[in-house]
Amino acid sequence: MVFVQKQLQDAIQFVFPGKCFDKMVIELNLIDPVCMPIVISRLLGLAITAGSLLLFVPQILKIYASKTGVGISLPSQLLGLLACAGTAAYSFERGFVFSQWGDSFFVAVQTVIIIMQILYYSDASAYAFAFLAFFWAVSFAVIGHYIPFNVLTLIQASTIPIVMVAKGIQIIENFRNGSTGQLSLISVLLQFGGCVARVFTSLQETGDNLIILNFAIATVLNGVILAQVLFYWNRSIRPKVE
Image (cartoon, rainbow, N blue to C red; front, top):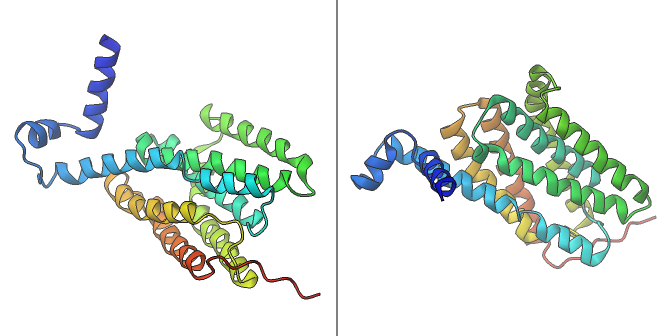
């Protein structure tokens, strides 16, 4: 019982830091200029982190049902994994609150599953589990602080062009195919909404220009992919001309 009470107090203190609980809950000053933005940011961050647990589940299920990853660019997924895993590792090392980077971690795990599916349902099935082992080895290296911070900073800085290339590859592939293949509308829509929200939470929680710019660019590019999914709705991939 004491443990539960402590966890509840910690949760309340996290959402309402400092004297924000007294001001907004006790005094009912809901529009306090100092507390309101940070409380909204914390709640939004927790919502995004919770939502990220299921972000790519529709995509994973769609690939599993069709037993193919056709239409989903493997290079794009690999670059996307580097971007979100890099953000999670950098934020972890910087000591940012988990609600600010937890979604990047969960998205990275789900992206790994998608990459494994693409490999497993292709001629490169033997590499699927080898890739999983590599990912976990790198994860433990980050947790154990074996990777120098300047390396993580470099990776975080590189996520900006990585995101542009990763999303650009998928956008170009969609255009060439005249279809979005096995891309899930729900997953794409959640990605777009999550990036929009992350721009706000990053401004409030970190003030880190690298992270803010990364999410801003990702918002624009995810918006383009969302527009393609809607435009190419129910269109099959055009056959390649030999």
